[in-house]
Length: 496
Image 1: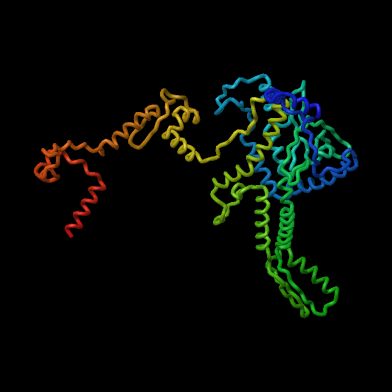
Image 2 (image 1 turned 45 degrees about the vertical axis):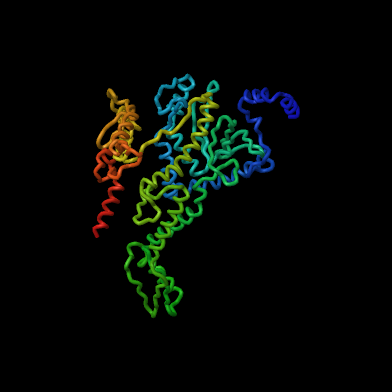
């Protein structure tokens, strides 16, 4: 470092700038950090400490998987987001090809990229692969893809179980590889270049992300207990909680009464059956049925769970009238896409563009993106197109191309359409001048001829408006509307 400082300090400014500009992008070895990563043990090379940390994490991931299988609101949110992110499919788009004209040349590297997108492995296609990635991100906070290389380029992609993966790194967070431990016997080790690791944001950083399912684990647990309570209530026929005073009966009689109560008064078939006692026994109802309270708790917990995933109620088929702050369906859809779908999609695309295109194939002038699907109403779309066509933002041939119709002659000229006329935007300058002449021409005043002066140079006594020599002044100037209005008002006031 001292030699570098001395070397560049002795170089002139212009020459040093040229040297700096010619340097390529820094390598990972040149950008090693000094700070430490959160959540990494002191001796990361110790196998026992690494196994212990992995076991604790696997317990949490197992709970999240059980929450996905048991709580339908967790699975509904995860599946909805994953399907929406990948609904349009993955496509490769050139950087210098605006509006998708399709004129960019396809290099051999791009052709091999398209082959990988069409066939990623023998069991999964690209959409299914990326849907599993989105599901693992939302459920576990991390997703892993295995890349298989042939002659230095990726030829296949496989999903890796996030619950069995461990990231190997030093204390500074520099990743050196990955370990997959399935059951303690089947173990696989991967280099850092063989795995695409995608993780969500974590509050303190670290090697692993924090998923929405993990944030919602507390309301999910409460929801599970609520549903278990409802299940037990309905299994028993929703009986009221009672207190039975059986007087001075013997223990055997009390046990027999308890068994008879379970047989005749509990269960769906016993709903409405009266409780009968003998020997002076008294029945007191402690509290009424609470199924309504349980259902209210279920709805409150449901809203907490879907809020943690950022999914509006209408997207899950929850239609509640009079819900303040819910917004319209279109507003909820826009909020869902901006706050939930686009961040997840961009996170996946950033990793794929770096590992597949730049590192895998060496492609820098293309990028991957999810194709956008227009979910708007057809009438709304056509009205927007009509407004753009009349304003000149669209040409007729562009409109016809969007609806799959062939172009027509003269359809490439932008027009401006009003209720009373149609004009070509190429003639807009002349049209604007004609409007100026038409609107201002009738308001110009004619100049009055000069009044011949008298012999002494002063104005004659009869040379005034309304007198004998008034005619020599020519036509009076056209009266403006404000002056006419003021004069009529003055005359009306004078007559009063």
